Length: 494
Image 1 (tube, rainbow, N blue to C red):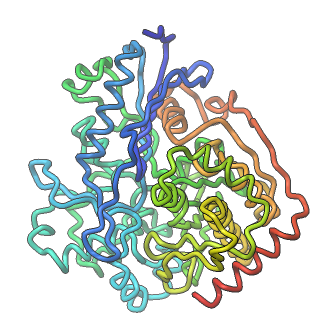
Image 2 (image 1 turned 180 degrees about the vertical axis):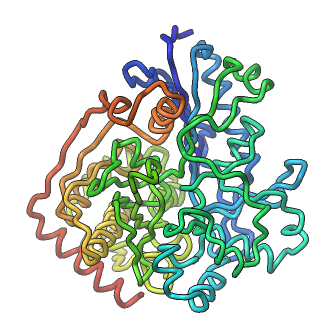
């Protein structure tokens, strides 16, 4: 077993495809051990067209398996805190006995789109632009309204509704609570009055008693249940002291905390996340504003989020369809392809895309396939370029809104491990890319260190975070031409 110096923290990152858990040494920020479960990506169930569901019990099973793995390899008695990062915008509902009432309606589910569109037309412009900073769209509040309209028995049985990370906290500690940042990502937060948006709750007829207790992202959110601490080999005094959605947490893990700083991810979905101290509202609803994890009443911090649903899921799909085993081997073979010969890919096959007008669901497609010139690695490279093009297109939208995007920080994870993806993103977006050896689980562990009081502030928590690579744009006429062709076809589709 590894001998752990005191003190240590565990970070849990609940994604759409797996749960990742990491132990860090709070003294120097070093990652001690990490595990991902399951090894095969968790399935997103689609029982109806445009639906996307997962079983919260599968999440909890994966969390437990991660603990069991770490327990076998480490003495966990010196762990003092746990942080939870989670896939955003999902809906989980339990009855009074804590039983799950229906599968979680997750972030990329599009069933509530019409409900959100109707609300956008009927609610006052000032409520949306000044208080919610978002159209209700396809977020958690609209998902809950859909349940009310389509399964009244299930809705009536709801004791508390929550976000995915709230459910993991409940299973760990028995505590029922949500966070201010979580309510904002569900479009239930009033930015102007700094509380739950009563007008939206009334409009959607949501019973306020179904909302869990509201707490901050940092701080004591509950002590582990005794059975869990015994089962996982942890001290009975361990607390969960940090909870945040995956995108603000990714920004946090990269020390992106102040106005003008920007983070990106390219996991199942791809995101550009900009921190601001202003209440920014996009009247075209292409980007969304949420509370950042370090927002306080004295230090305003919001996250401006642009999302592309079809990112890593597109790369996972092409790997499965082509029968490939290794992402790294796919990347290597794709690097040998010098010219795609007008082959382009659109990754929009994972639900409606918010960055398009009216949350369009234009689906995914290859365009320009030539049976005599293209092989499967042309397809692989076109997927990498197509996802990168979509992120670069999103940066154009942010710049059109007046947001400066010059330097972007990312973790050395997921699609950002690919040389093709990095190069394409940097050269098309004309940005400097800074790469760090960190991820959401490490960020959640650091956040828990702040929440439990081990670190005095963010500066203390990130003093050992180092950049491992920097990329700057270079001239790439062929790539620029491919991107212009990609945009031209996209404009016809959208």
